[in-house]
Amino acid sequence: MSTDSPDPAVESLPAETAGWRRLHPFTPFLRGWALLAALVFGVVRNAHDLLHDLTADRVGLGLSLIVPLALGYGFLAWRFTRFRVDGTQLRVERGVLFRRTRDIRLDRVQAIDVVRPLAARLTGVAVLKFDAAGGEKARSTLEYLAVGQAVALRAELLARAAGLAPDAGEAPQRVLYALPGGRLLGSIALSVATWVWAISAAVVSLPLLLEGHLAGLFTALPLLAALWASTFKRFAAEFSFTVAESPDGLRIGTGLLERKHQTVPPGRVQAVRIDEPLLWRAAGWARVRLNVAGQSEKASVLLPVAPKAEAVALLSRLWPGLDLDAVELTRPPRRARWIAPFWAARSGCGHDERVFVSVKGLAVRRTEVIPHAKPQSLALRQNPLTRALGLAELQLHSTKGPVAVTARFRDLAEAQALLDAQAHRSRTGRHTDTPARWATG
Image (cartoon, rainbow, N blue to C red; front, top):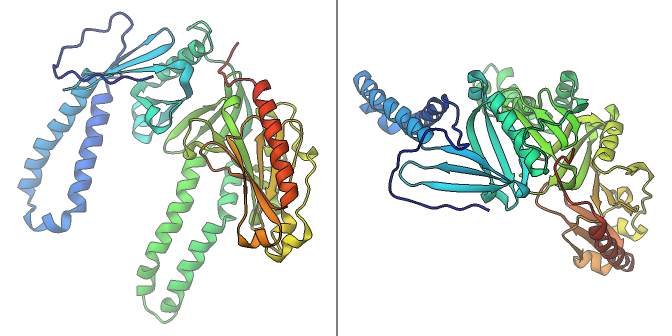
């Protein structure tokens, strides 16, 4: 629940009393410089039109006006922001001209993450991010807090959400997987995107270079920039990736320039997908992505790259008792090869008492897993070709995310039977499913 109550009157905030807390004193500088950077970016973007008017004196005059304004804005934003914990909710007040009060119910919070962008890491502060039920509009942040304060506040809020004492402290954790740097570099080198950009740059530039034209280098620069961006961006995002197990869920830490700490409560996981790209299969590597209720698709990577056996073993931490290798899969009928000669033979689906499993894909082999209690809805789909062959596709709709569970090229009668049986399993599963909760001890 959140409430915005605008008040045009600007009132002086009292000192930190009655549990009210303030953000870190560095906040005005970090926010001010962020505003300054945005203004500079706007000037640079329009530099072509402004270049003939720019002089050293005008630049100095502009900075003498903009810098104090930016820092002044940052100070006022900090001065009129405070927060406190009221029982089972976090109350945040902010606003310079208009006072806004937001109450974040802890029982509605899906995740509390500690994020440290590069500027924050250099100054020893962090951002606390809240994902609550309700999607993008329900997200909120506290920026910036001292790192120790952010970690302690997160532990306090998680304890309160679980009904524990506020001073229970952060639950202990045990590291399950740490991504070696060499494996990360190897997975990037064996990615199709890396080779596409590299080969494209070579095709464009080599003919001109062999003829002695240096223009080949300039022609390839955009492609080389895309290659650098795609490889370095992934390296920076997945550097020092770790997955740890704790009573409040799986804790994920990652990032080179921006360090992120995310907690995934097992009960929030709606569906999982294991990807095995063609170039990774010789090394036996896989990537694991998941749909998490209330979290964005950007926060969907459970394992960037790991041996498949370790990836499968990790699923048993999400859903104890799951043996993915023991799930028996059935293949589509042979007539499905008339419309999908390669894909149909490599597709299959099956289930056990806990999950429904679908396997498909050629260049990237994908194994999709969804617990029986998690589908939002079920559907059968046919196009003119599949209808002519008496085939259908079973769809198990999940929450928003990268995983879309489907059983393709099934006989129509079989697909209808699968849908009816899955509807029964889903109803039964929802009655017996353990509700998603934070740590309980």
